Image (cartoon, rainbow, N blue to C red; front, top):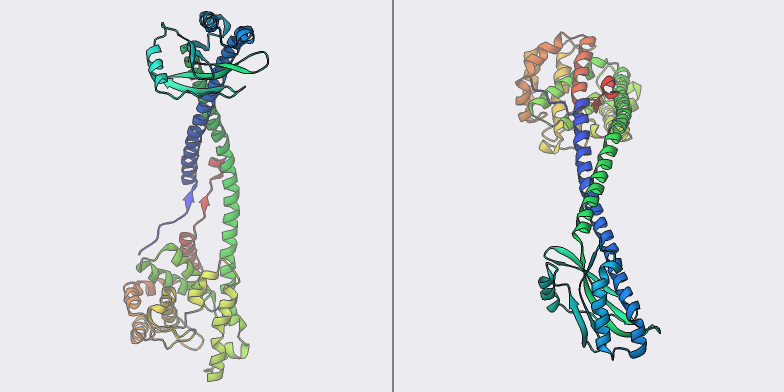
Length: 452
């Protein structure tokens, strides 16, 4: 006998899924946050060092302002002397822990170089000069300072171009230079950035660990609600089926048997669990529309007249109207709406034929007739297994789908033996097992484990 695997998740599975997703989310967030922190720290040190470089240019401007007031840039030798003196003294004028100027030049408005000096002891001075020789060096506007971070020998440097102003704020000349960031500053930046990244990552993972039990708790509550809701749905299904059976002077046993038989046939076809769920709902409620049929027709012990039979046919649209009012029951329409169709198109409902009829309705047609033939009714004794199968065979290709009938024949005798000796209580147990298989709890909660 073929059974579908449960689609529900137990608590262990849920924990595993949650852990995996939280780890992935935490790892991804850590990478993003760590990258953002790293570049943020990089920007901070760039801003800090740039400020030091601008401070150095401002100090030089203040030192030669009196010279600019007196002679502009006509006294080039004086400007050159001041520039060289500034370069020698720059280590005391600017915070050398951040770095120092290793190259500077002063030029006039026509781009004529007034003076140029460099720190020949700086390890990468030649590489800097090569880089500057091929670079376009901007002329800042009056009162504007241009800065840019450039990399030479994989070491960041600050390029600065600034106007030299006289006391009136007029740009008389310009200075540009390279401020080399010290190795101590670079190493300090890397250590600080690394610590910050580690701290950020730690916060992310700590938050993830704190969220995990909260999510488990919320999942437990949602699951409990879901389980209660599903139990209510199934209870409604049983109550409706029972109400129809009592209305039709029948018992619940018929609904139970046709549902069990239908599921067994569906399993031989390898149908998906979702399809079998729909089949179970439809089998249980196949005649729910009979609630809307008058007693004198529904309970008539004799054969119905043509007019009465036409009225009886209305139980199909009545049934569709009922199940369509529930989102959970809506997929039962495949059986409720088409269980009186016949394979050759001679049935009623929509007059469908062959594979136009939903497979659940074609399966149910076999199960319904087989149970009717093999069950005791007020107006008849049960037929034998062989007699029932002969009648089904007579309907091959007319009432029943031949392929499905062949599948049913492979299990029919065992089903007949199994169901023939079952009382109502045993049928209830069998049906409950089927319901648990195809309507599993969304999550099986172990309260003791969750509380840990």
